[in-house]
Image 1: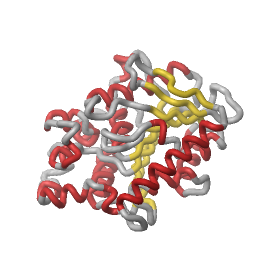
Image 2: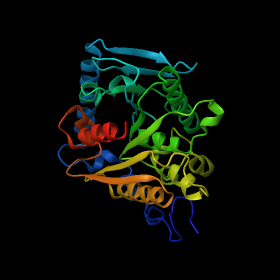
Image 3: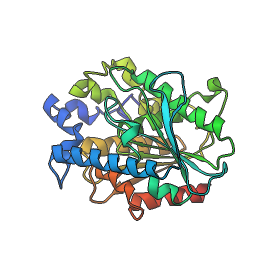
Image 4: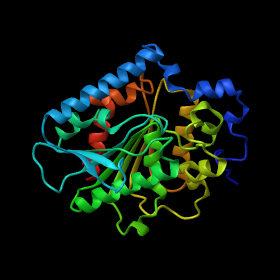
Length: 306
């Protein structure tokens, strides 16, 4: 019998960790290999800022488009040089442990993807403490519904998220699209260094602004939902790439591996990619490079599936 967060009857490994070790496992900056923790975070921020400035400088964008009524419910849309409605869309959700990060510094992959004919959408959502996990999941759902309604002739919508953003993207696998009156043309998900079982986060300092209870964690854990699922996925042809960096912490590796295994057991078309010699931050900031292996994987997946 499956149990929430465990994947099988044995006790989840994180439950045997001391608080200090659990804190360490869920502190990605402590696992970087080429830079110190503070320098890695500064570099991550700098590259995101510069990539966003460069993407906006082209003038081929719609910025601060409201996808909902809330002040924070906005997104940016970056277009290729040759624009038509019949293009693939990649929608990106930033990370930051649900409490930091911004769409205004997250256009890492825009230039390499728009150069190849992909429309890129960067989504803002209300981070903690203003936003709750339930609200963030709902906002991400709304943003996808908005894109589908605005561009119904799209050649496919691909969700991409990093860290907490990967969690939010993964929650879309269990979204109730019927209540929104539209089913998005989802063709694939790219989940980078994600967290899919939120229960361990409750026992770290990252939970201070989130105030997550066990019920909150289970309700907002894609791992838990998919383990409890008794039916096959509604869109099993949707391609899911679970991606983790070689230098991510062991807990991030475990989360990725167990989520991938759960997807496969559930009938999803999933694969697991460990990217060689990159850490939690490099896995994303390298997407500014057109020849980066993950950039090429994303483009190959989009144009094979479109």
